[in-house]
Image 1: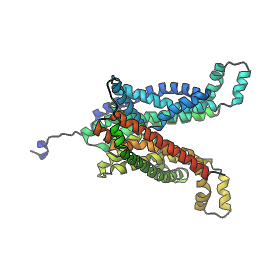
Image 2: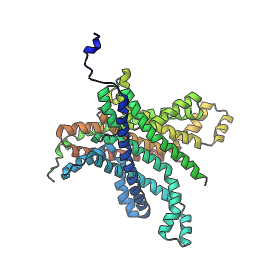
Image 3: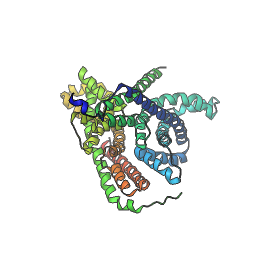
Image 4: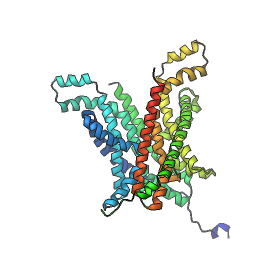
Length: 223
Length: 219
C-alpha cells in the first residue's frame, strides 16, 4: 500500500469545475459594475450639466463631489456599510456596494461631462440659438453630439476604472471575482494560478471595451 | 437611532494616525519615483525599442491598466509565494503601486513623447548633441511639462490606492485605522477621521504640486 493512501487530503487542487464558479462571480462583477456605470453616468451627466450651468452648483455640488474623488473608495465603502446599522437598518453588501459605486461613478463622470459640454465652441451654440433653437434643442442637437464625442475617451477610462474598482466590494462580502478567488485560494492553496486566472477574467472584461472605444473614437474623428 | 458616538478613543489615537499618514505618504512618494523611472523606460521601449522590448513593455502596460489594483497587490502578496518569495507588507504595497503607476505613467509619457515635434530632435542633433544629451536636455524636460498634470493625478491615485494596503496587512493610514478601530469597536468614527485625513492629504498634494508647477513652468 502506498504512502499517499494514508494521507488525508485537506486541500484539493484547482479543478475544471471551479471555472463555472469563477464565471458566475465574473457575472456578479459585471452586474454590479453595469448597474454602477449606467446609473452613475446618468447622474454624472446631470451633475456635469449643473456644474456647467450654475455658479452656485459649481461651488456647492462641486465641492461635495470633490470629496468622493479625494477619499479612497475602500474607506467610502466601509463608512457607508457601517453607517446604516447606526440608523437602525443594515444594508446588504450588494446594495451598499451599488450605492457607493454609483455615487463614486457619478462624481467622476460629472467632471468629464462638464468638460464635454465645455468642449463645444461657444460660437456654435450662439449660432444654434440665433437660428431659433430653444435651449433644450440646442442641448439635444448641437451640444450632445459634439460633447459625447469629446467625452468618450475620458468616460471609457472612468467606466473601466469603476469596473476594476468593483473588486473592492469584496471587502463587504459581496461574492464577485476577487472574493471568489480568495475562496478558491483558501481551498486549493494555489494562489499563483488562481490569481492569474482571475486576472485573465478581468482582462477579458476590460481590454475589449478599451479597444472598441479606441476604434470608435478613431472612426468618429473623421466624419 | 440608539447609537452614541464616542470620539475620545479617536482623539487619543490621533498621533498614531498622523504617523500612519506619514507612512502612506512615504509609500506613495516612493512608488511614484519608481513608477516614473520605469514608466519612462516602458514608454521609450514601446516607441523606440526592438520587437521583443515592445512586446514586454506592452504586456506590462496592458496588464497594469486592465486588472484591478487590488488584484495586483494580492499577486505580489500571495501569488509570488508560489515561488517562495515572501515580501513584507511594505514591499507588497510598494511593488504593487510601482507596477500600477509605471503602467499608467508609461501611457502618459508615450503621449508626451509623441507630442514633441520631430524637428526639435533633428535640430539638437545638428547642433552637435549626442542622442542621450538630446533626450536628457531637450526632449524629456518638455515631456515632463506636458505630463505634469497627469502625473499629479497619478500621485493622488497612488495615495488613494495605498489604502488597499490594509487588505494585505500593511499599517498605513487605512491599515492603522482598521487596527485601532477593531481595538475599540468604534468603526464609524475611526473611518470618518481617516476619510478626513485622506481628504486633507490629497488637497495638500494638489497644493504643493500647484506651487511646484508655478516655480518650474514660469516661462
